[in-house]
Image (cartoon, one colour):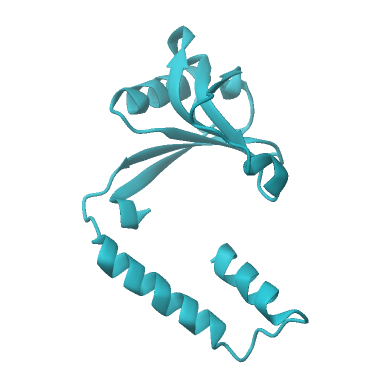
Length: 140
């Protein structure tokens, strides 16, 4: 996230009550930055940029780790409503501006260097070399 001048703060629902989580989410969204609701169970992750009902309903999009068919049709033009998000076991991630912004040029150079290091790594070898390398770069 440093490429975009962003950082984050994480709040666990097992340490904070529902009212606090709703307050944190709505205050962060009101500053112009989204929040991420990451369930502890395998289910949709929510990227919310709006809310209603005093934060009981988040407005945004959802995606599911590993489900490319679902994730490829996400649209920021069609926000969905997510009610009761605060009732589940979650991690609430508040996206915030970073104090030490990295230039896009430097971040791209670093990403290319890291990608080159992954491609030239003699340890990781795959049956389908290009597919394997793509997965390694994607996951990193």
